[in-house]
Structures are given as C-alpha cells and as structure tokens.
Length: 187
Image (cartoon, rainbow, N blue to C red; front, side, top):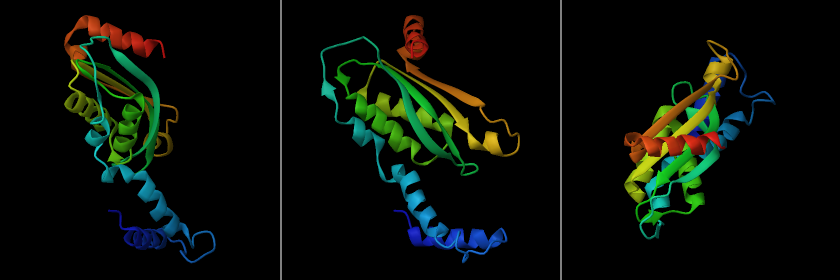
C-alpha cells in the first residue's frame, strides 16, 4: 500500500534540500500532487500479473503464432526515478490456451507501473505468459526512450533501447524465430 502522507513529507524535504521554499505558491501543493502521481505510477505493485492472464480460454491444439504489436507503455526507471516509455511487441505460440488481447495489454500495464528496468520488464512479461498460458514459445520486444539518457549525463534525446526476450520455440526453432521477426517487421 502506498503511504501518501510519507511521500508528501519526503517531497517537502526534497524541495527544502534543493534550496527551494515548499510554501511558495507554485510549490505549495506539489508534494500532494506527487503523492497522487506516485500512487498512479506505481499502481502495478498492488496487482499480480498472473491473475490477469488466468482468465484464459481453452482452445483446440493450435500452433499458429499470435502477435500483438505496438502496445504503448510508460514506466519509471528504478535507477534514477525518471520515466522511460515506448512500445512492447508480444508474440506467443499457444498450445491449448489463449487469452483475450486486452489481457496481454493489461499485463504490460501492471508490470510497467512499478519501479522497473526495461530488461526486467521484458523478462517478467515473457515469463508471465509462459507460466500462465503454457505456450510452446513466447517472444517480447521492447523499444523505449529513457529520460536518464535524454536529460542527464550523456544527454542524447531520441536514443532508443531495444530488448528482446525469447523463450521456448521462439528461442530454439529457426522457423519460429523468423515468424516472430516477420510479425515485428510488419508493424
């Protein structure tokens, strides 16, 4: 559970620590606004992504890959607490269970609304699909821009980080890999 009062107090202290006056008009309600914002940004901490995908449908044996591409997401990097955002592409090869497309999108939402790393987000998403739907293969591609790259240190806005996670047949079988990459190419 998010402790909004503690967040308000902490941000008030941060404002003081940077040499600003937390009681001036522009900053007076900022700690309260940040507490509300953090409750939203980190709402995924209260949810279990496996529960979202547990509402699957039994289907006859199927080996056709299902792809969902261009799922937008926003997250907060745990290293600097700055945002990173982009798109997630997911593909899986069902065996006997499929899930509504909106459920995959919801899992992306749940996992991205946590202090996160892009690499971990892809791994968690792929493993969640593998563990709950038991497909013969899962592929996840994430392309994101990180504010820590854009506004601090190296200052290279527009730089994208791309990660791939492949499990099962999508990792092991060349024809499945090619099908996964073909889905990504056509988006």
